[in-house]
Length: 271
Ligand SMILES: NC(=O)c1ccc[n+]([C@@H]2O[C@H](COP(=O)([O-])OP(=O)(O)OC[C@H]3O[C@@H](n4cnc5c(N)ncnc54)[C@H](OP(=O)(O)O)[C@@H]3O)[C@@H](O)[C@H]2O)c1
Image (cartoon, rainbow, N blue to C red; front, side):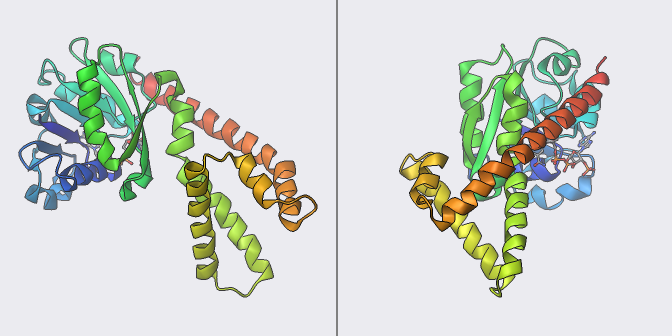
């Protein structure tokens, strides 16, 4: 099976490097093309590089489109006449619907959308995947066998891809910003060096997640376990439960609205 990746930016490069490093794809079965050929110079050692998207599409059984939404339509038009009859087309972009992707393809095609998370860098992605109705069980198996080299694979319906992306793809950014605020607030009351605070908080954060997963604990279980009634932790958790819900509500309100506007703009090019 030959796998093509069009677009060698942040996502395309990460996926190509993971597929090659995991041994899933050798030089002959991993095909790459991108707008700026100089970026692919080093990849020639471990992948087959094309200078033309259409040529790549004519050889690939799975074609990953690792492109920004406004580059998608142009590339689909470039490859539409050369794409293999039974190819699986995979868009990394969540904003453009299956219906619109299909409009730029020559015939009814098997199409999937895949949203990896930056945690794929440490093989801990919670990669989201959704399929149009033509994708077969065999296609799903082939795609999943590739994606597991980056971490877990979670199938969602297309309509849930927005909130799904907030929860796994945006979440590293949300978590980092929340703990950035917490670390800065703690620094007003301590002389412990910044790097040591960050290390202490990160290790505690990772261990809390592992504790919950291993012992099947809920967030409330952890709070109850640590925050003894009338104690110090309870004083802090009360502040979070009283003040943070409004921030969390506004966060999702804003990000989902931004997602809707981005999708409307991206989809309008297909009208
Ligand atoms: N970044 C994330 O964390 C993340 C997570 C999940 C999903 N996504 C989605 O993944 C998609 C790609 O994001 P990204 O962060 O990888 O973007 P990116 O870093 O900008 O990469 C896009 C790549 O596409 C190339 N390209 C543009 N037009 C092309 C064309 N006509 N032919 C061939 N290659 C072309 C660009 O070439 P140049 O190098 O010449 O610019 C660039 O290398 C987006 O739709 C994004 O929404 C991103």
